[in-house]
Length: 295
Image 1 (tube, rainbow, N blue to C red):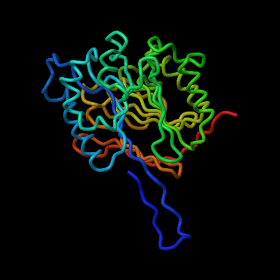
Image 2 (cartoon, rainbow, N blue to C red; image 1 turned 180 degrees about the vertical axis):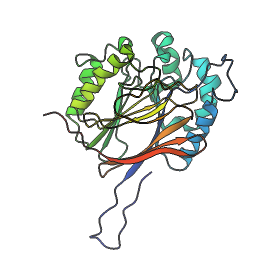
Image 3 (cartoon, one colour; image 1 turned 45 degrees about the vertical axis):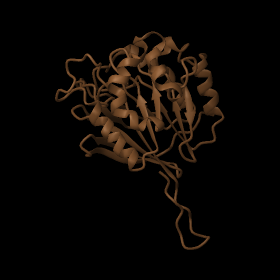
Image 4 (cartoon, one colour; image 1 turned 90 degrees about the vertical axis):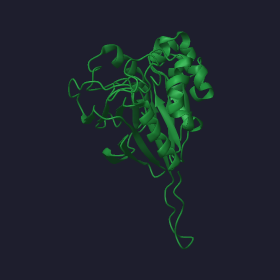
């Protein structure tokens, strides 16, 4: 999705280029789930239809934020439930692993189903540039399965080096476990400790925006250390309760399925919108990238 330059003469300022990215996690029920086709749960088909419409209308990239296929992310489960709902957008999909992917040893079903869309088992962390001025970073917060998440791990060294050598104005990082949440994982030390290691390196490297899943809610936070965090675990599996109001929480939704739509602009801004399967926008805004790498 590119906004063309406009103007009637050579002195006209070119309009910024924009890339539209769609993201969500915690998506498809297990094929044996008793809640398949019931109202209120297992709504992956409706979320898939929403994503397909958005891609047809110009969205450039789709990112799964982990737990794309419950309960054990087996290949046959992917083929039975996730694939029918999302097969059409596979060419533009980037897959991030959640904890359920690793419920099968070495996340074999995840890597078999996704192939290059998930990186490799030994190197699942990746980066790409959707539009000039922006970098997208995909990480794996299942630390014990990927050699760690700290600064001395392979993932940590790669992340710090990549951010240190980046000339991009804005960066969005995505991994499964959230640092903060108002849902059922609020106060969960295991979840927080995984995210904190990645968050500290992201912050030091000038990351502006972090997207997570894991808690089955939508939540937007105010900037913390110049990073704005979103939790988008509304991919269809089921909803979780809001158990608290986490510090900095600005918007919480736990009764609608939908996706986060991001318009990443080369002028150093982004627009965000939480779009439900009914097409309603429940939360939206425009933000400037303000985080700078540590000196």
